[in-house]
Image 1 (cartoon, rainbow, N blue to C red):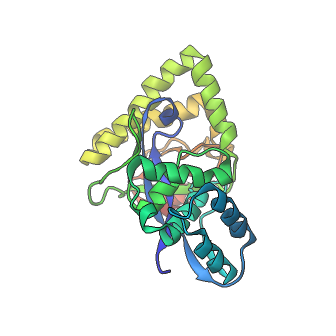
Image 2: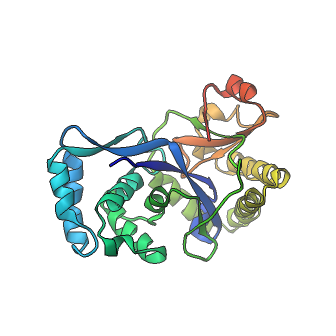
Image 3: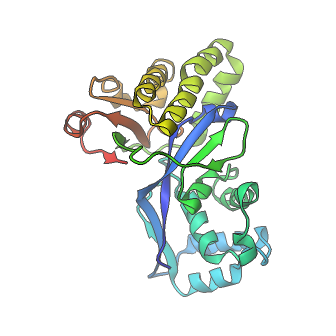
Length: 282
């Protein structure tokens, strides 16, 4: 079982993708899960019990999964939980990759995503299926914008300058998602600003990244970064408020906000790390 299953990072479109905006998420191989034979994992055995009911044997060989788990196979890795990096999605991807039947592995597009929705509901109660999809395909995925999630390609070297900041603060995504939806749906003034200064710049960042236009990317990154600190300061750990603006780097929330990781772009690695400490470069 040699393959690893990467974490995922939402580069642009967090929250606004829930209201029709575009999003872009990528696999992040620095953090991953892999199969190893060491000791039983009770949580995976419980997941297996759920999958026996959720999937027919024509799609997922839960008997083989159970045998492997009882033979001390388990998933190990370094994807932190509560960070919005897709830890449960990587679990789903690993199980589907190893134990889906030929009929199950033939699924693609919306059918595959729906299978992952059903799997990840065990962990979250609800799921878009996107996190497992990204980990399974190990490719960038375009989200929202009125279409199903779909794999895409990015230019060589697209990740140059991008980094993640570990805030050291786990969080529950649901509280921040609910906060955004409540304000977006209930406050016309906030909704208009979010459309102009977050949703539109996020879509522009995605287009700029796809065509390799760094000037447009950074202009729009700066716009949505300023909006997030001004309108949603409680989505950003307070220790980073004074570090938010710099001539050397840009920062934005990554995922739901409230902690986890921040996404940044910097001109100079030494300058970034002098200001923010060690970061994870993409």
